[in-house]
Amino acid sequence: MSSAPPLIELRGVGRVYRRGTSEVAALRGVDLEVLAGESLAITGPSGSGKSTLLSLLGCLDRPSFGEYRLGQESVGALDDHALSRLRNRTIGFVFQAFHLIPELTVAENVETPLLYGGVPPAEWRTRARRCLEKVGLGHRADHRPAELSGGEAQRAAVARALVMEPPVLLADEPTGNLDSVTGEEIAELLAALHGDGRTVIVVTHNEALARRARRVVRLRDGLIETEERR
Image (cartoon, rainbow, N blue to C red; front, side, top):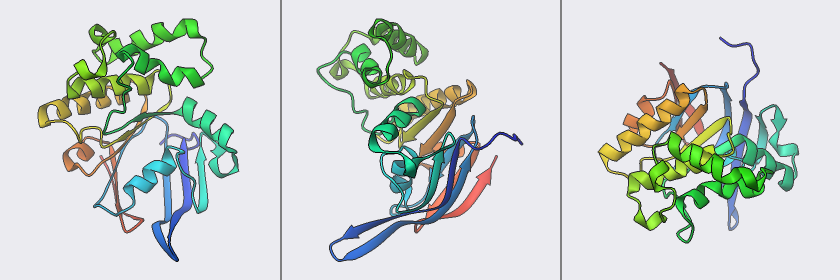
């Protein structure tokens, strides 16, 4: 076991939402550590807290209580600008719905995180092309998203997630909009990226996809119910 500190550390993290006059606890005190280079799947039934945990891990939301440390930085102590910088340099996102901008080419879509990442514009095209080649989509760089298949669109989204060279890849139901064959190809791609040394966290209700991870955390009612290592 590595003696290095966790890349991700949650201690007693909860998230409470207010709905009218009532409060709903989506997470109720989660403890979780993720080491650099791990492959983790987070799963559980609808309403278990997966989406909320995804938002917290991705710094898209903040805990109501408890502490979240990402790369040794306390997320709760950061202002919005600092949090955005941390998110941009640390986490690459892959979403179920791809979220490609239809007016831009595939390469331009991949370049979009670089607009906010402090990367010199002269490097943008080279970085985007390199990431597209890595996911097997170099030949589609100048096409528009509407010209891509579902699998190609998700590969483009993976390339975009990689372009800032983040240590963490966070995938939200990455095979949810794909047929089984194409979904398996994306699962293989994520496994290959983990094999390159990247930390890969997949949030999914797909048991087959979850079983591909080296570690599986199952949520229920806002708490970790079980944890399995392979």
